[in-house]
Image (tube, rainbow, N blue to C red):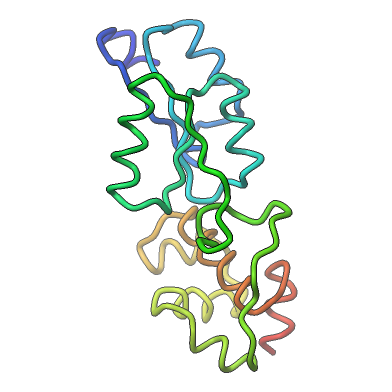
Length: 174
């Protein structure tokens, strides 16, 4: 808001839902009322589809998942700047677009060992630290990642292993 005060010509504002200081969706209506010229866009790598829609309901013009490609983000921004509201619908073929919120996502078949082999190198690093009981912040510091990125990896790992949370992850990994 300080930047908008200093630079009223700003036309596009992106707000990451996981940025420090982001308390709740009410910030969208506050900014929209104070700076009606600014187009507000919510972005996140760990929101559910329902949360994305709630951002628009709260005053954002659009929601962009971080899982989109650079070309998709560019196209979305062009649509948004042309006046369109934008919230991409969940796509079962792209399970990383949104976090789980009731949309059924496939869990890979095979044994636990076979599913662990499907993890990316970074997910495998995060997995090893998760099963040791480290917090997202501790893992983030060790791997030079944001806590949110660790959260996204932890979610993907849990999905890969067919568990719902870290507690179950540790249990099946024992």
